[in-house]
Image 1 (tube, rainbow, N blue to C red):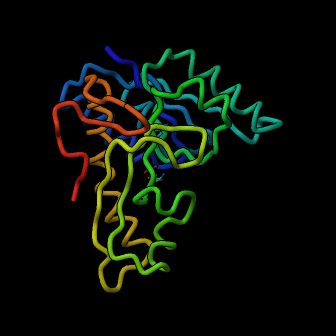
Image 2: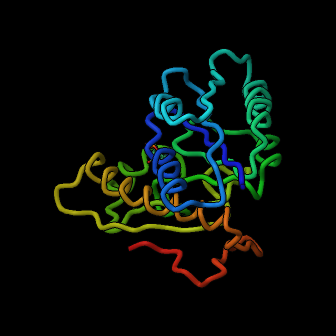
Length: 208
Ligand code: GRF
């Protein structure tokens, strides 16, 4: 049984999709903890009501980024994760933290990386006149929103879209590709080589 710990900052809809899919599809894994950097993160209630340990490491209570990272690592390690997932986790993690979990830490980012790392991805994609946008699941490396790509989804930009309609369309695909990528990981069906990620069964790593 692989132990999964999920870090969130807010709503946690990706976390919920992973918890649900893990149970429905009987992955050889269990979400053992959900940890938020904000005490008011709504996703914590979902975790508690599903019998999953919920913890808070409040970044505002820490004197520095390094102190926050160290405290977070301490709490994460209590749950001995095989896989650490960032799911709408809105804090930048320092290189020491990332190296500690490198190779067993995934993130989902709402853009077709390497386009639009960072914040406000949908607004920036609209401003750039993109016709296609999407989301990316990738291994986390010290460089923000970089790292070997596991899976991507793509959706069209439609006439009249604003950043909210676009975010909703992309989010629906995030709830498909993130659980799938996590399932592949816990089933040992991903291989990394030279910064590239291969799905060992030859399954498509694209959702269109
Ligand atoms: C998602 O769009 C995710 O890609 C981004 O922040 C959003 C979080 O949504 N990093 P949720 O908390 O999973 O509902």
